[in-house]
Length: 85
Length: 85
DNA sequence: AAAGTATTTAGATAATTGTCTAATTATTTA
DNA sequence: TAAATAATTAGACAATTATCTAAATACTTT
Image (cartoon, rainbow over all chains, first blue to last red; front, side, top):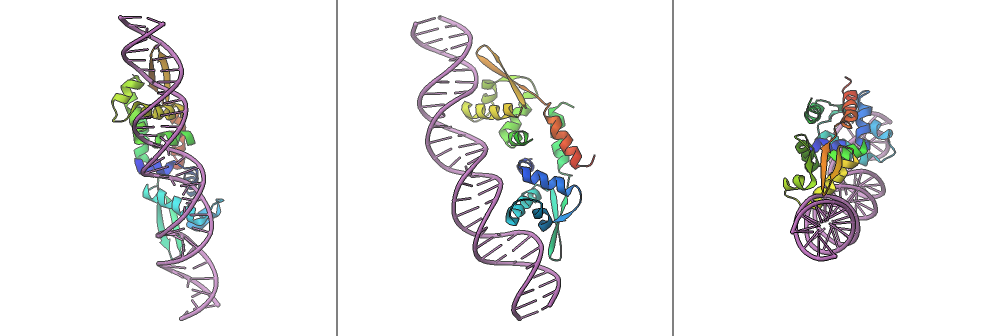
């Protein structure tokens, strides 16, 4: 849970997840959408990957990133427990 | 959302929320349950209050803290949107 | 009013985090 | 094989955060 919350605790990373909801993108395509250097985006992608919120798939020269929402189920049930629901 | 995620991004604060799920407690009672000084707990309570995850109710010399899960609804719908559900 | 209890505020410090530039690795194409 | 392209890794730096001790505020009880 710690890694998950840490990953979610940044607006850029949350926006990356929202963008990936529309479909897979390469690291470069993701970086294009932000006013930030590629190494910075690469670092954010790494944290998202650590939390298993995205998976990286290398195809030739490119690395495609895919949203992975499975790990959010754990978060959902934590919230529901808090809400006694 | 930023304040909410920031508040949730700490194991002590998440544990405070879990404890308050069982019922309201004073700041001192909360602090007793942690191996941490009262000022540190007070600081954590302040961040939870900023995120509106708890509310503070002063009764005489004591301040009772109450869990407030309403703000979690926003988080739930953000997660559901990500999951396309 | 003074002493005691509950809690917060202030200020300091070490650790973590987000960002950058420069360098490196890996792949493709001329 | 050399040059170009995609992406990461390394290293530095400023900002933020978690924690502590000491001091201040607020209320209660004697």
